[in-house]
Image (cartoon, rainbow, N blue to C red):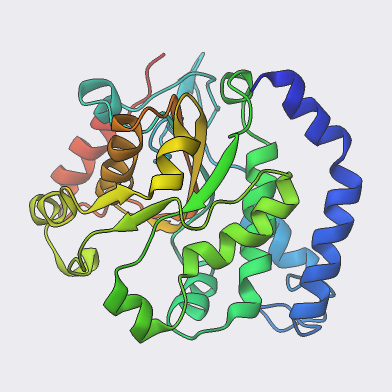
Length: 284
């Protein structure tokens, strides 16, 4: 898919926006999900501008927020920039697009959807993620939008317990908003893994190793194609790395993560914070 296709999507954005707007207004109460003010689309203008109005400088591969420096000015987004960690050990996925940092108050949207079963929040998260996709820098746009999207699958037990896959609930309206086909049964989780949030970084990687495969239809669908992988939160990236590795073993050409929120690293000491900042310095 080329940049020309992305431009066609942009040309059709008014009608896509109108459609998604109607879905959001029908699903959400007429109040802001963050502050409770009157809001016709789930988010008031004040909260939209304050928490989602300005894109952070991020590594284009893993989506980690970074401090960049251009002629002595910090906070400048540099096209093609990757963080030191991705340069040292490149993950299997090619790019990550993020709508928000996983921090208050935006984290309440994820928690409300994931653990509060507030499914009406999913179209709002999809709209905010769509905005981030369409703001992607020239380097990402050069590769075009994904040709199909899917969501990180849940294990059978967790799906039965929760009753829904929060990533898939975001992927459905996102697919419609971007005009990209959704394949909800592209992948399977072969076993129920432990919750990543309870594990150390080393344990997380082992936890999801060889945990995914593709369905027969998925094998045919991904070969030679650019796949968009939707998830609600990205922490260490180990799950998405394993998912992307699986997709590429079956012939996917490119994998882009479409993630609502990205968790920032939390250094334990001032010295750790200094080291972390050094490691996440961006290079071109």
